[in-house]
Image 1 (cartoon, rainbow, N blue to C red):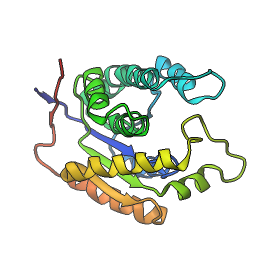
Image 2: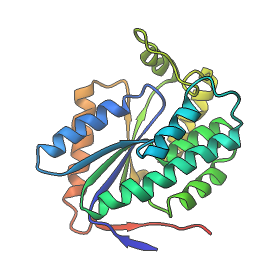
Image 3: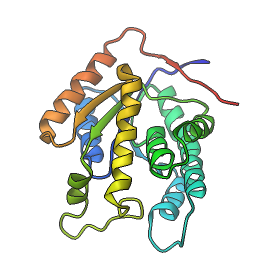
Length: 224
């Protein structure tokens, strides 16, 4: 089905420690300086129920969470996020920047937890009624570099961040596979590049999207 959303929807993806939040903030500032209204949000989270679910699935101390339960918690948070936050902002003509979206579940639970990437994608497309980003910025980070960044200073790793490097290597491969399958929908950049260079390259790609005369057409797939 085709929906008419006047806004622009951009997702930032990548392994833990890739610098997604930093680049989302850089892009938001650049777009706001051009007079655009920007909504920054994150997953899991973005809504009151989503933030509670975030705590359950990422904080230590909640006991064992099996892979299917983990995938369903992320999908539930995403359903609320898409319905209550992202779609309304797009309908208002805003630029939505989200730190993680469906690809994270496909990579973390589908590949990392071995639940199957297609099964997890179908679940999340159903949860979001098929809402897809106009662009996904993938910041590709080596698992070792990601861990060094996450543990710098006194920072503590959350439940997923503390998984072994092999888990994060599977996630990295899954992200790259997703981008390779639909290259026109992704901007893949090495996370090791300087912050300023990454920000400039991301802004250039987004400006090209903003200049398109018919960027309001967003094709979405709704699964049964």
